[in-house]
Length: 204
Image 1 (cartoon, rainbow, N blue to C red):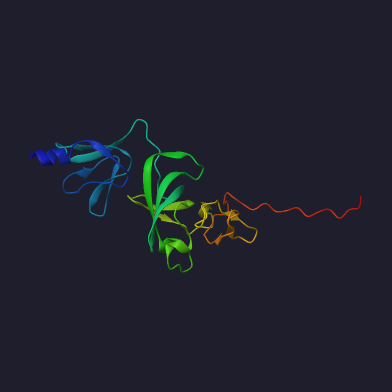
Image 2 (image 1 turned 60 degrees about the horizontal axis):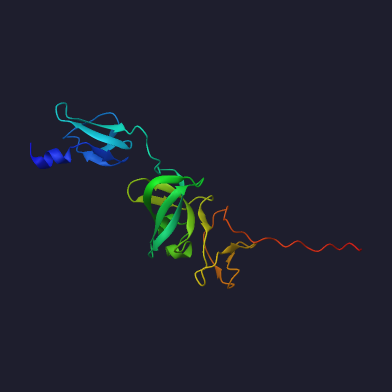
């Protein structure tokens, strides 16, 4: 057996969905499954290749780190934008609890809204903190905003950098410079305009 073959099938840390080998090379054992012509890891753990039985297994770590999974609603910051794609750094779950490590997600324009959206920037902009859902936890993570719970939860003014406040009409307005911007906001957007109380009409 060549050195390259031994190196390829050495025990190593693998993530869910990661291809381990072809079914013709090793049969799937505990902690694995077959999909798309590959034996893949079903869990985060250590892949082990038995060269005698030709079975590959994935043993879970004693203490598993927290990682995002398909179907999770997570918080992410927009770090890059092109016409059809926004790249997010996933920072925490929807309760604000941090994950173990850094994860990158991709939001395609087709996943921004149920209505037609030409470019991603119609709904999100650089630096926005967003609540998104993970469609697929392959790397990079595939994200969606197609849910009433999802959207931008905090945003800064593109003009002066001030925090945008959500008005009673649903617009995002900068208290500092007065600029009005459009986003797809989540129902729990963090900064909401305070309603002014009317003066009492009673006589003294």
